Length: 347
Image 1 (cartoon, helix red, strand yellow):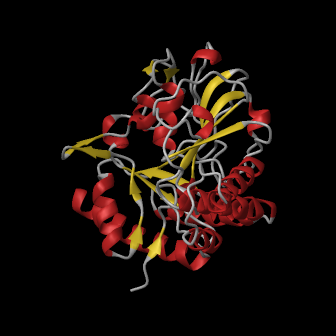
Image 2: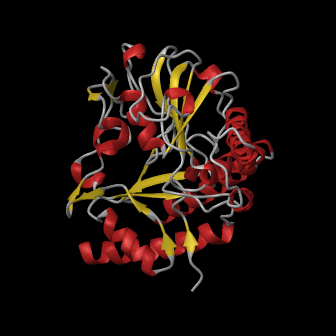
């Protein structure tokens, strides 16, 4: 059975360009902080990647601080600050902010005071894209970067969170992008790396992969790859919608990431669907999360006004550049077969 991976918003396959850059970086023996030739060679790899990512993210002239991922970048940007957020943010952001911004039924966040708020650029679960208000303190651009044109210098946010493994880079490396001159106390202190904002010897191998992946992702955008992905997403959505009457398609009429489809069948738990589709050869995600074995409804969907049963019945399908029309049609056929059996049991 050929497996089909449809969970790109969770993590993406490693791009060949990133793998090649990482393998090359493995042969470097120097510490980027060392002044000898070996250290300078390692430092050059780090700075090349920093430039690659800045160009791809439209952040030339901004500061880019490498971290262990977007989660650490969120902590670096938000810890100790009086920042407001909504319930649709990633848990890494919600952990550091006051959750009191309102969300509309369309998934849009109301931001009374942008300077004291954080708003994601695109939601990982629904794919719904936000309008970033001018002067926003922080935006989580993790899902949007690499899937749609993004220009940090024009989006109006003071800081942005990004991660390598969402665009074909390795896991365990991310960055905080911030306007040059922004005052940002270090959370990890020591050797003063990353302009004194994040100490610790740089992850040269991961950084090299991040840079190569960002550059390749920018090429994909320019070549129209994600427009083709959006067409496949729409083919899948139309096929599912034609075969079911009880399923709700979240954000269907909203601006969304080109690869993301979120839908809920009230009464059919999301985690059950994930397990059934896994056994059928498809990797997808549930719209609900488990914590200490206790299932809870999606905070994203409940914030948008969906009831608990619907929010606990959502799944997310997220496509990638390698996804084919055959893949999505096979998935639609398999899912509709399971949905028919669910309706028969529930009758």
